[in-house]
Structure formats: C-alpha cells, structure tokens
Amino acid sequence: MRTEIHVQQHEQIADIAPDIYGHFAEHLGRCVYGGLWVGDDDRVSTEDGIRLDTVDLLRDLDMPVLRWPGGCFADDYDWTDGIGPRKERPTRRNMFWTQGRRDLPEEPNTFGTDEFVRLCEMLDTEPYLAVNVGSGSPDDAADWVEYCNYGGGTELAERREENGSEDPHGVKYWGVGNENWGCGGRFSPEAYAEQYRRYATYLRGANGMLSERDMELIACGHIEGDWNREFLDALADCSEWVEGPYDLMEHMSVHRYYEAGGDTDFDDEDYYRLLARSRQVAADVDDLVEALSVYAPDNDISVIVDEWGVWHPEATNTNGLEQEHTVRDAISAAGVLDDLNARADVVSMANIAQTVNVLQCLVQTDETDAWPTPTYHVYDLYKPHMGATALDTVVDTETETVDDESFDVPLVSASASERDGDIYVTLSNRSLDDSDAVEVTLTDGDASVVGAETLFDGDAVDEYSTADNADAFAAEEIDVGDQGDGTFLVEAPASSVVGLTLRQ
Ligand code: AHR
Image 1 (cartoon, helix red, strand yellow):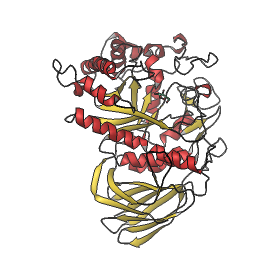
Image 2 (spheres, protein in one colour; image 1 turned 120 degrees about the vertical axis):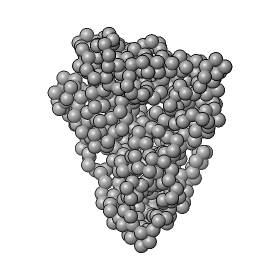
Image 3 (cartoon, protein in one colour; image 1 turned 180 degrees about the horizontal axis):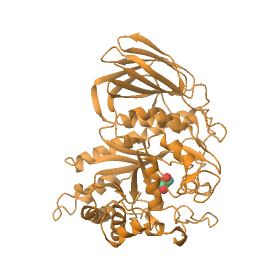
Image 4 (cartoon, protein in one colour; image 1 turned 90 degrees about the vertical axis):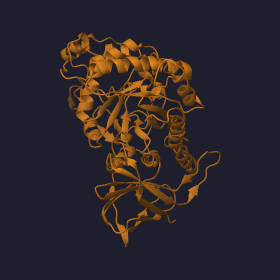
C-alpha cells in the first residue's frame, strides 16, 4: 500500500480548541466512586479523598475540561445533596443507572460540587457542570450558579465559604440538561426549546448579577431526524416578543456512541465496521453545523460533542458500563480526533466517555492500582495538536467498504497542525494486514524530523489493557525517511498510529 498525505500549509482551518481533547465523568458504576474518589480508603494514596494514581495519569494528558455529574444522572441530581459536611449528606438512589437493580449501590453524595472542583484544580482542568432540567427547576439551577460563582455575602456564597472555598469556583461551562429528548425528561424539541429559554434566562441572569466570569451555555441536541432543526426553529418562536433567542446559547451539543461485534470478540469485518461507524461523529457535527447556519447564521454558536466513544454490548448497567479496552477502540478514537481537528473552525469541545473505568475510558483502576488504556496513549500522542492551528490535510489512500454502512473506511486517517514553525502530523494505518509506506509532503518544502513515534506496532487489534500490562501500549520511536524538499517517508505498521513532528 502507498498513501500520500499532503499538508496544505497555507490552508489554515482554525486553532484547535484544546477542549476537543475533553472528558466526561458521570456518577455511574466505578467512574467517580472507586475511579476518581475513594474517600478514606487508604489502599491508595489520596489527597482530599481523590485518588492520586488516577490524577497522575490524567494530569499527564493536560486534560482541558471535565464534564460532570452526568449524563442521565444530571437530570435527577439535586446539587444541594452533595455539599456540606459529608456525614450529613443524604444517601439517595440513582434513578437512571440502578433501574430494576436494587442490588446496585446507592448514591452516597460524598463526591459533590466542591470535591469535583477540587479534582479539576488538581488536574488544572476547566469544570463543566450539567444542570438538572428533567426534574429540577430554573431556581435550583440559578442557585447552583450562585453557590459556585458568587464572591459576595449571600447565604449561598457563605455556604460555599463554610464548605472550604473562599474564592468563587468561577465555573464557565453550564450544560442546560442532558439528552433532554430522552433520559433528561423526554421533551419534544418544542418543549425543550421552551425550557431552554427559561433555564438560560435564569442561569445567565444569576451569573450576570453575581460573577466576574462570563458563562457559556450549552444546549442539548440530538443525532436523530430533524430534532435539532425543530428545536432551533421553536427556540425563535417567541422572537416577536423576545429579541435574539439564539443569543441564549454559546454551544449546541450532540452525543454519539458506536459499536460493532463485541469488545474483544470481533472479526475482521467488525473491525472495519467499527471504523466506518466512528465516522458518524464527524457527520453529526456537519449536520448540526448546517442546521445552525440556517437558523442562527449570525450567531457564533459552536458544536460540542458532549459524549462520544465506543459502547460495546458488554457494557450494561449491571456491570457499571464496563468493557475491555482494545487497540481497535484506540485506533477508532485516533480517526475521530483527526476528523475533529479538521473541523477546528466549528467544534469547540468534545468529551470522550467516560474518564475512568466506564465505557471508552482512558484510565482503569482496581483497589490498589490505576493504569492507562490504549485510548489513553492515543490522547497522549495527540497532545501537540491542542491549541495548535489545524492545517488542511489531503489524504490519498485506499478505502475498505463495509456492507450496509453509510461510510467507507479510508485505510489511512490523518490530521496536521502547526505551532511556532513545528508541524505535527498524526496518521493511523487502519489496514489489518498491510504496512503502509506513507509519503507525507509539506507544501512549503524543506523541514527536518524532530520526533516520530508509533503506537501499537505489533499489537493485535483485540489486545486490551489490564492491571498487568500497563506499559504494553506505550509509544515507541520510529525512523522516518527524509526524501528532501519537504517529503518524508513513514513506514506505518498495520493497525498502528503515528505522531510525527517536522520543523521548518
Ligand atoms: O455515558 C453513558 C450515558 O450515555 C449518559 O448518561 C447519557 O447521556 C448517554 O446516553
């Protein structure tokens, strides 16, 4: 196989929002309890109840943003349950993730707003809160803003101070519910539009009155049918009386999960099918961008992929949505990140689901250890793209067709970005059988290779991470041939991911 990648240095797309490399953590299974928070459990080192082995791994990824507390959990969450002295916090049942299973654990509320913000501080990451629209009220949501963001002398601000945070948390991102077409209240697009206007008015009002930091509001979209268009249409229904309904949001979000075969039990066709389905993330973005350009052409509303990743059939609420994490999953994530880099002009955030132990997590834990998944290593390899300027990248490669799928699979996926004269190129050879002599060409000519690493060389695509093979999937250096005049030859092994730094 011979693929050509042309990096169009004069075709700058936009700066890649670091938040495209964001994360999502929900009160579900062992993501928060056990994965991030262990409280007084002294089998692992902790700081303020937060487990440090997980934090150390995540810190190395320069996590830009973390969305919390859900997910479906958010629309049944009373934030006041999770503040104040832990011994006094109520134990509740989580409506969504324990349905029909009385044996599953209750919600102890020992990890709440202040613990979450503390975790974000430890990770130097931006907190993103999703408010309860499904069963809550605009008043509760506005109170949460006041608790988090006000530095004055109101009762709620003083409660935060009593709870240990003198300075306001300054939370910038506020999601107006979660999947409100489904678990978040089963709203029609029209009904959600009405709720959205109401919530946004009070959230914005509270923040404008109280906070020194602007807030950014996120409306929940959907990936089905005309839901987004109907919502956007309905949002303006009141425009006769209210000016600028689209000013009430900075972002609109979609969620996309995909699967094919089992987590570790899949054949070659399933392998390519998963990659074909992963392309739907970019298609969802394009569709929402198109809808926004029709309804709100003069507003700068960007797209957030609030939740995305592989959700295998093995991950059910009975096992806390846990699944094995293979090289296949990681290769699919690399392709999605390339697609998102290429849409840097319209995508402002994307949060892989979920950070620890749940779904396509980056870190797994047991009682004593934490270790990275193959997908973790992809995020590590892609770090140089964060905040760099995305460059248009043309990939001339073969494709694999999968029956009954909307998309083919280009056998090489790639993206490129530029920062201070360094060009960073990521490319995945997704062929199961063939290595690829990939020719990478820079339009501006001469450059030198300052670094080249590969992931998964020699790993089978169904290999998965365990407590005992923590370093097995780490990047290895590779040689790259400099052909002169800005052309480089990368021998990319079958089913591998490469990161290449070129300096001009
Ligand atoms: O991530 C698991 C669940 O998937 C989330 O709670 C929900 O938003 C989505 O359906």
